[in-house]
Image (cartoon, rainbow, N blue to C red; front, side):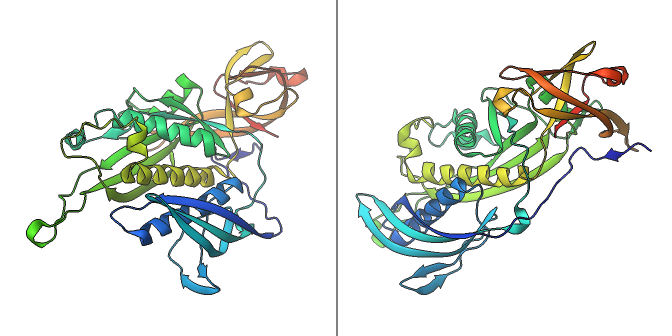
Length: 382
């Protein structure tokens, strides 16, 4: 009997728990004199740095100051758990607050699993913004493309399981998963040799009016919203495998009539820019968790007699001598005539003998060469 399996197979394997105490430093800008919020942000940044260095983000945490539990405010998910955070010291440097914390880091058994050592290519098109009138405040017309570039840069710097392919000047209009019965993410992935499509959508970047004290003696900067929805599509099945919305706000420190360049250091070093940057860092950690334990599915993009070419290469971590199992891909339609990708396992194993940055090739040897292996069939690393 032929063995059948879903393309989005998850694998899991527990490993023993390990705990360790580490120190880290974080900083944040003090806005409108709110040192408490700056302290919270600085501590989050310190924890995030430690967890990214240890292959994850965090699930739960406790803040301890001078040996006393002060708050349990943060809830994030992780390949490692932050059991406790002790604030060692803090100091001001101009408009910034710098903290040093000690973190009790413990591995999370339930989310530890083997990895194939490969990185997936994630295609990121220009961010979509339905209400482009919100760009007028600050003259942020370039924000959608700059946001895509910055998200790609953050992914490149911090991701353990992926790397970006940015199309910052190209939008993908995808109101539904299918167009004319075809899977849009799959078509795009085939064109770009990417394994996933990440669609950023700016839901709200509106500005609230500034507030003032009685008699107009002082005035706070207006608050600007930042609401971002990220959707990760699988490049073969076209399915949504992860989606999350992020919401934050921060003081808009620029004059009402100022023309702000979203690509400038002035923007990214402002309170609003730092809040956006924190969201992007957290999103990369969340994407990594979504990809953790998920095997990378390569596709055969060409066949010449007994030689096949895969759509992954050195940039994905493929090396000469790596072995891959082959699965035959086919589509079935549901009652609405929407295609769904399935695969049938085969006994065929191929060994990579040549690699380029984006592709790898191998020979199909012996009696396996007669099997009906075609373009778009699947390869999984052994």
